[in-house]
Length: 133
Image (cartoon, rainbow, N blue to C red; front, top):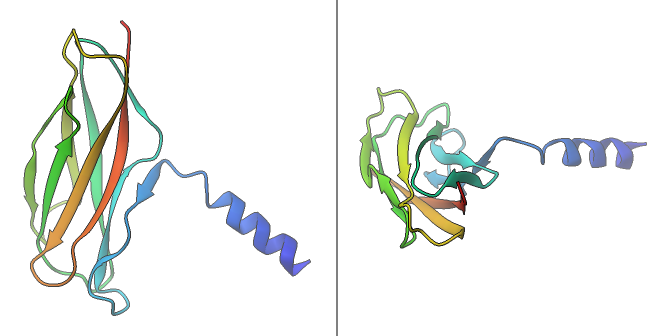
């Protein structure tokens, strides 16, 4: 019975809308942070612009500024490419992803790196899927 319960808890935790990065900051409990990005491919039509939000999930005791560096694969563009999220700021960061009209169809990787004032950086990725209009 315990095994079944653990299996159900494990399976139910897999269906989230956001994907977390490995923990950055300090290894002490509550003093780190993660970067949450979309779990599923972000689908954008050729020639369109779409907004996507990423966020910093702070541990209870993590009170540092975090510099986010965002880089998109060649073929799509993203703004901003760098942003400082102050400890007092809201953790959500809106991104604008632009897909040119002539962009090749397919998947493009967007990587996000977060570097705290002190401690270890962390990074994660998500995919942008370019589809025809």
